[in-house]
Image (cartoon, rainbow, N blue to C red):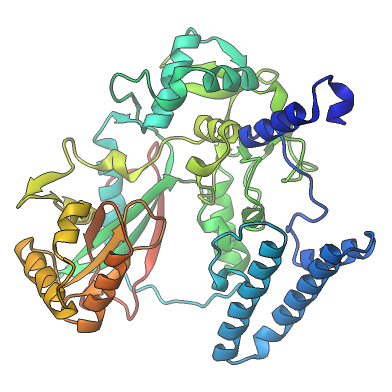
Length: 489
């Protein structure tokens, strides 16, 4: 089709297509998108209508093997399930390698899943929850403006350089000009860009602990509220609770639309929480019952009088927001989708609540960050950051494991790192590993992980500690409030 529409050669046309895909303007349409529980069987049947080939046969065998494995796993012992997960990973890896494709790094336990839930008693007193919400609201209101991350700040600065207050331009034209400008990499940013604080529904994920007989709420993250995180489990809530969550979500739906490019693995977990739709060619989210629709090509960017660029519907003359469920990783999205997400989702971040000047200080030759506390809230855990030269000096070649463990224990004691701590290399996306200074096996695990690492190594205090938890197991709580209407007592 592309070759028929252009006089360019094959290589040039292929390069153009690849560029469009990388920018997020174009996508392949697959026979099965993985949106239904029966996608594996559907793809297996689809292959049955294709011309026979060695690759088609191998793919059909793999799909049938995965279907059979998934059906038998609910009836197996845990050891057999783990073995089947491992075998499935090997089967997929082998198939992709034979097809000349580098296998993605997918944990084997993520290949199969089953929705499960259980009722858990509320172990935190109601007055503690209310005090936590009071402190969250007060802390959020303390700053009238928030410094934006570099990427979001570059979008704001570019929009302000292109548009007068109140002016508008086509969204896709905005994307094209931004991606061709120096602003794309934040090169023209002279200093941090600030915008007025977001006022609306804000959500927080917290863990409670008890220190010196008092409850503390360890803040793990903030996100734009509106019931979005609750919505993942709406189908499992008791009817009365589900209605409460639904009414909370439906207070502000009139100018909201779901993110139109959710990852295929996330579409299943994205309930429709808003009335509108931003229409895209692949239509990942159905729009049959939408109260309003706007094609992506007709969407505009408008600069508000306060200097904030927003998505704009030119027909209804209203601002459009993206109803985010916290399922996407915006930094990993293709460029156009990343711009859409950042213009549509308000800036709500734990970083915005940290005090001015909070950050790293040099202490005993290493970088150290104190714990940040506001009233009953712990905004940031205490942390230590070692560069590669520093942590390698604790594990020199030629020393025994026992000698290296001793080096680490002495250094950790000098830096006042607690007995339980998490460690991770900043350049990786792996989850932090928990270490126990009193456990020889745990410290040997630290040595093993250190030897295969590189770059800066981050140490963070474990909080809550096992003896600080008000319940048998560490639990996360989701709290939401509306900063426009919240009343302190």
